[in-house]
Length: 139
Image (cartoon, rainbow, N blue to C red; front, side, top):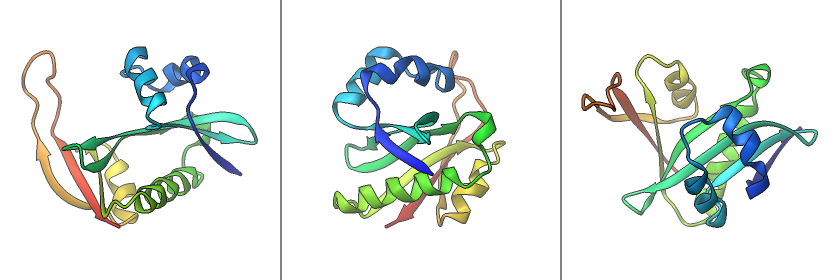
């Protein structure tokens, strides 16, 4: 059964196994403002999820990832619904996320009701990547 908890400072070693981009200093800030979650199955850490506020207003899911052996088992949907409900309870009316155009997660988000909402092309070294698409969902 999926258990979703706010991350604690002690979760950082596990966090780094799935998210190599978030520096420890930013992780600690997010812990303090409760914008990072650890995802567990029977008290075993299986995934992580983080968000920030786009324009200091709209909850923007910046990462959801599971250990490979726990993917495609419905945990992602449960985690997203939990996060959306939490955002709704906090008074938000809209949430957003993004994904690279070549990633299959766009189909996952569309199944959850997210709509394509634009894109960003980063062609400035060292941030050169393929197009990132933004997706939004009204709560």
